[in-house]
Amino acid sequence: MRFTFPILTLSHGGAQRMLIELTNGLTAIGHQVTLLLPVDGVISYDVRSNVVRSSLMTLNVQDFPPGDVIVSNYYTTVPIAQEASNQGKGIHVRLSLCYEPPFLPDNSLSFPSYHVTEHLIVLSRWQQDLIRLNHGITGSIVPIGVSSSFKNMKIRHSLQEPLNVTAILRNVERGFSWHREQDYLIEQLDLVKKLCPYVNINFISPPDEFNTSEALQSIQATGKYRFFTPANDEELCYHYNGADIFVSSSIFDTGSLPGLEAMRCGAALVCVYSGGNIEYASHEKNCLLSYRYENRLGEDVIRLIRDKNLRTKLAAQGEKSSNKWTWENSVKLFEQAISDLL
Image (tube, rainbow, N blue to C red):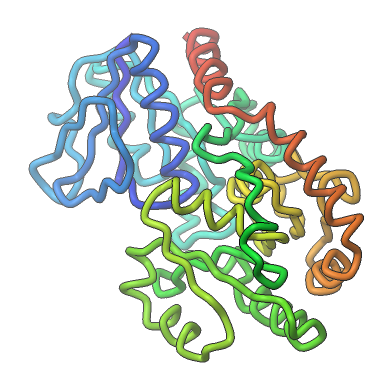
């Protein structure tokens, strides 16, 4: 089949990671895939599909090649995808990588964008239920995956470091990060450091975000935390492997990829319920999971710091349960979902 994916950016992030893995995977199994980006669209991943740049800062319908399927994702790509579909350039399918209305600006635009096409793909049962409740459309589920680049290197003991507690910190200047509860995350990890001063608190940030974010740089300047800015999967895998405990404070995610990647690398996961992470996170079986109102993220981290047996048990079970989450499976289910929709 011939696929066209209108995409605004492929900078570092979970949604962009899924777009890359799906499109590279579809290309690998013989489909003709075109990524249509604005002239200034960032590409931070290895792209194995055909890339077409719009001549302008926005996408234009004339830039769409003839095809079988047009796959929109972010709500601002929906109108142009539908316009191209109306001109016979492919059937329009919405791949909802996040449910935008509750947590992003312009919900008066993003909410009705779910009424444009009945063909919908979502990432989790939670997201499927949310959209069905609000719009009456039941999307096909294509779950997130974990790259084979991420694995347990079994290097924690050889690092000979204090216990490492690690989280991801993104920039806040763009205004789209409130759902990550990063102020709460820092507050809770400060509490951890106060009660367990012998541990390291580490933050991982995409290098392009860290280098342009005064907020992140000011947090680093306090000297209270170590910052890592991995440039690729190999470096990110290494930092996941250095983490004894990985912490996620996000309260609204359709998939919540970093927690799953950290589990694959052998870290014990402590997280807040965010919707999509319930697909893989099971409290006291493979992680410690709390609801935000319980306000116990720091307590759970401290519990694992002090209970090595529980930490070891959850890390081992988390790594084991993460093995079924592969991008190969995601690509297979995406291809099947498209075939079923058509």
